[in-house]
Length: 102
Image (tube, rainbow, N blue to C red; front, top):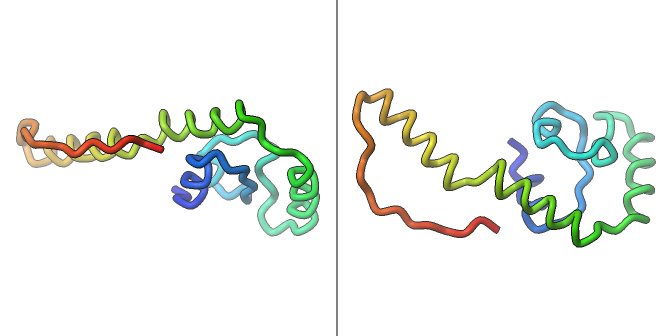
């Protein structure tokens, strides 16, 4: 996963990324992707997006997407469950530090 992209989105920042498969998995609006290796497409999308500020609703939508789809605590717990099942153990009781997702 493109961690820098997810981090920028978690702060509600406007993003423009290439259309490589890893970035496309994030499922942004089409205007947020440019064709990889196409300088003219990059230039065109940059010009359009530089003149368009994100609304507060758009910023909140980006933050919600990250919080719901890429919740690091939930992903870590799911990964741990997979390892526990692979080791034929039941769930491990443990204290967990909870940190809010930005």
